[in-house]
Image 1 (cartoon, chains in turn yellow, red):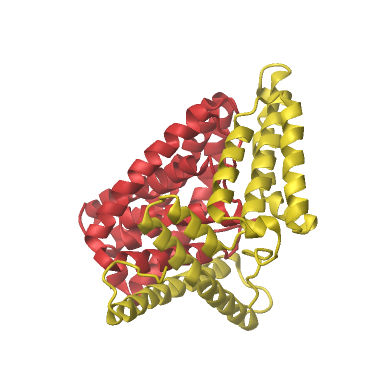
Image 2: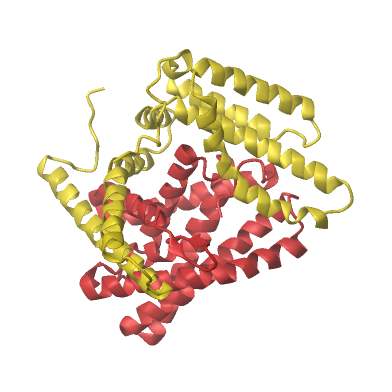
Length: 213
Length: 211
């Protein structure tokens, strides 16, 4: 199964990929702070931020098209907000809207650059060194470990369903079948978690993760 | 409803972050008191489960589709504290890896979906469950809680956007509530169907501790 979309280009070899993940996290966070607190009318600063991101993107050698596709996730929310613009007072609405769209797009660009140039495990290590609570990091790394397995399992069940139910089925029947798939997925996941926990216990786990580093 | 960066002003996202960090700390404490060292593997796998479950697209109407949100489902299955932690972890990973929801807005997203959606939903669920009792109480409680929690979370989102000066409250709030009153029906139906499956196969997995 192909799940490489999660950190597809994180294996590339550029200056940005090799940089310390702590450094990248801090710079990204500060950069996003600057972006979101920029005045909606400060077009010059938006151009500047965009230019910096584009240069970093070029240095990282991540394909532009890939980044562009990833940044499209912002669109539904932008549309939702755009609906309310005509109701804002006078001309301000349009200016505010333009500023907000620019701000959110640049922030997403920055986050995409961070995750596309850093492997998720390295990102978690960086977050841990930056004193994000250990328990949160551990849960996230477990989630990352089992995400692929469970997504695989879901897709397998969906394929099985599709190969059995061709032709017309009532909408409610489809909904019922899909809900049962989620039900099975939950029971299997829970049982998997118990097996994982027992396996960890039998290897001497006592609530702390020990690593060689 | 994941708010991206840039839609919330500092007067909204900073307090939301503070509330979320504090609330999450409390939830982790309460959940790990109950689960002890089982906490990490169970929460991790359950977060992966919610994530995978959200990937399934349900047919709605006229070619559109929607997916499970899972806040109340997580609370009914895992309890309010563990449920809130699981949803928060899912939100954090969606923000970091998929840019689904912004980094500065993550606090507000956790506030809306983990606390208002999941814990708030659990309160409604447990009240109804106590009043009716039995499996019927579980299903009725989950259905109403799922609907209410979706509507509440979306109103919180509209209020946060209004406080930020991004959209006018008088129009955005009713519009968001109206849309989510429909989305909530779907969430309620799916949650009930999943829970009735679990009740038939592994009824012991429904969270049972009294609040």
